[in-house]
Length: 186
Ligand SMILES: Cc1cc2nc3c(=O)[nH]c(=O)nc-3n(C[C@H](O)[C@H](O)[C@H](O)COP(=O)(O)O)c2cc1C
Image (cartoon, rainbow, N blue to C red; front, top):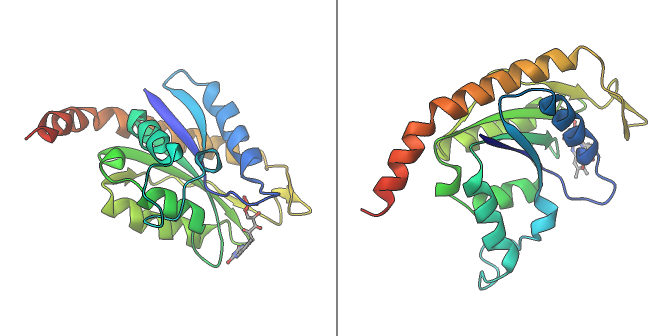
């Protein structure tokens, strides 16, 4: 099983790689799935619909999400929602998301809770089963100077509990993904 840890921010100086790498390190200590970082910045996606759609990053993004069985979204709060970059990347695809599971790790002044709830509504429309356990990281206590990630120890248990659910639901939804593949031809 392949699970992508998707970095939701793209700005210069972003902290999402630190958070994503920490989640991956914890995930790699498990033996339930192959975990990989998926950095939306690498795909250089244009704003949806503003080009002829032939940029190689668009096809590569589709291929990457298609090959994954589940996701962990690294979500940061921008104006009480997810980043425009993450929403744009999500909107670029449809079937590629369907019948998969996702966990959310968020951060912000209130643990990124509002951005995470924003994402949950979007996941529902895309037939992604978002799991209950939701590690929330505080910009005030899990980062030094809002930039150096120093997570409190207590989060590790929560990360594993979230990954337990993502891995179980990604497995449980596999038969539905397979039957959807068959139905694509119809
Ligand atoms: C445009 C913008 C809006 C923001 N709005 C919020 C907000 O509404 N709530 C919050 O808790 N933090 C907010 N922040 C702070 C970010 O959560 C913080 O800068 C975080 O490090 C951003 O993630 P990143 O470093 O991966 O880009 C905002 C930051 C930016 C750049």
